[in-house]
Length: 188
Image (cartoon, rainbow, N blue to C red; front, side):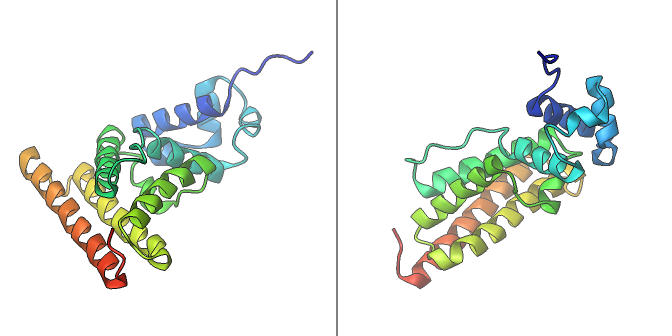
């Protein structure tokens, strides 16, 4: 009988995220994560095949750090909940959060999060052939705001002003989504 596993995928991703939070994303290497876990780098390969998979796992961790809204909620409430969750994640993980602008959702779990956004857009009446494009545009706007906020671009503004700006951004995006749906004649 073999020795029990000392680590699992969750431990690897948790350690990678903690390392990025403490020392920056550039510090996340297979060697550094293995050292943090007290194992050899080879032990990680059972759980993440390479650094790219490790980074994809970090994207997954960021996207799943907040609960997904219930599918039965109105589409705009679901998208607002996701946007607010993303903003909170950015504040908790400012050093690693820009990874969401660099890497697409790739793991099955991360793709389910994107699928929830697709479903909300479809429920809003966005035509099926426009859902992916609309999600890219909406996500980029939300991620861009969150990155700008945690990177200091808005540092001279009060939290109250930024909260108002974020609310205005969500209202603008909602209007664009409704317009996209209206152009298709399929508003729900």
